[in-house]
Length: 411
Image (cartoon, rainbow, N blue to C red; front, side, top):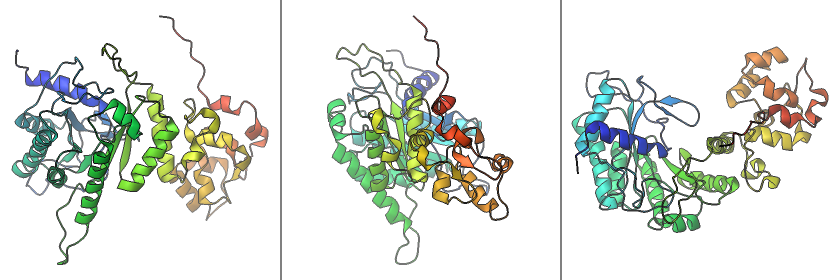
């Protein structure tokens, strides 16, 4: 077999990494090399080639160490039985690529995942060695995110956290039953134990010792996880309930959603196709409402939708339309909780409103200056110079916000 060049490996393994969605550098500690020692920075500029779900551009070298894998997870394009082209980086090749990409100002750091080769421990050892050499031998101070392997030894996970800014361990699917059916080599109890161990290690290392000294930083940007959507019959409500439990149990920084559809048949002839990105987008929006806007899953998921989010309009707007009796809200007298539930109002806008109305009664033009999206909010609010009249009860109100129908193309 002809040996692949580094460029060929990079093309294969960067493309294979696109299915790893948990790729964001928020939350890490600030490090830089301006004092003359080390290389890299967590805050420098570069060419952005990855996007966080909230829209922030981040520049990371995002690759798999290898797309060979001994596991045969049905939903994974890199499963053992797949006929995709395979490649594998050596430890030194990943290090060289990271350093050279950084020197060229292409990236701010490294996101590294991998298929499982030989064994979980062997694979994890290789990934930890990459992070260790970057930090210790090359004094690399940029961001490192390692996608860890839950059934690797606890010592390897502990070592990984000493060199990486963030660790992530995939829960794979919303339910244990789906994991057992579609990824039988993976064990949900082992995944949860590994996530719990990481949480405990993060908390333990954040505390000072009895001497008052800080312990070595352990995954200072925390841990995240990824959940596959579309590979089983889980509804959006099932997914969001599962995410809520994960945030609570493991103090996650983020749950990322990534979809594969349809499930391949036994002959593995069906391609894995990304499901409509709009479903992922709606799940991220709903996730944001649960975490920062005091919504509950039962608020967001409407019973008549069979547990699914409305794909045509965002979850907050869908909630407001389903609860019109609570509107319109008087912007000049409403409490923060009520303001946060108005479509078109973000948390920063609400903060500005609360500050501004201490000094004056707010008018329509004031809202525009404060950053409110009034094209979405105006049916739901009253101001000194604005009232929606009968707009809030209009039968066609939802149609005003839904996208226009598209002409289907016959193939």
